[in-house]
Image (cartoon, rainbow, N blue to C red; front, side, top):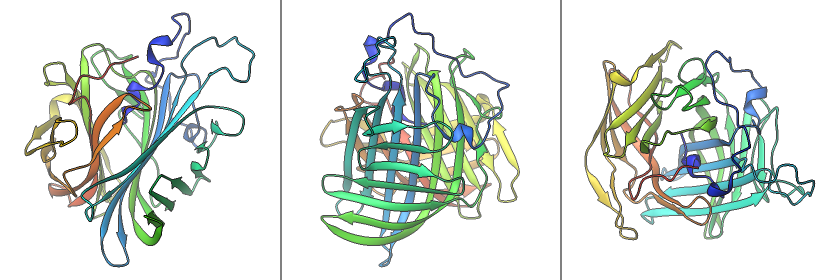
Length: 351
């Protein structure tokens, strides 16, 4: 799940452009589906995780690459035509400073400066990149006052979300995405803050989604979690909120430590907000503690730090909360992962 529903240059898409729908019955194909799906309107590769320094200091990190097809003058032969737009967000959650290290990038694809390739994970903007060779992912980010260089080794097979990779996002079956995750990535590398490099290890999670109609007109935002459980299991869950804040749709997948996969329909999923944190910069109120129910299982979520708000108005026009959380389980093991909260300041303005 990601904030890609807001992506760039939104009102300008030409009505004549026909974007394909994410449809059921299309099996995921690897490694092809790890690469770009350029015909679809929006797409993102989203990596989040917990890190630990040699001094046992916990850190969270996230890096997301978005691709959007704006549908503007696609018959223009110029190499400068913006047929595909690339955006990247990156952040480190650092309890020592109490707020995010954050930066962002945006560029049109082409000229060797920005690209999302088909057939394999290979997406970059300038010196920011996410690449994969089928068994290992690598990401590198150099921000204004922080950065990281991380190696992400697969320990598990991809996890198809929804119905074999077709993930409904609302009552209309066309409101959907192609969607898989890769949980339990083993992380090694380094994080740079104020010019000082620190070795780190940890666990991470990859989400990859592509869609042309991510949310319907009645949706205002979503809440999402991706949790790596301590026993090797994994939980993804989300709910789509309507304009009154009620649950409009939901989905969840639980891969047990023994490899069994259970999926849950909307009526079996409940997100119960707890403690509220108010941003000192935007005055937006976010529920940063949660009880999350899926079938007979329960997770209690608490944040690594309260202030994990991302202001990405320069690239997506959005402000949202995305941060590292601890999970205590009932019916599952405990775990660590990420929580994303969108549409709390104002409803998402969809393309």
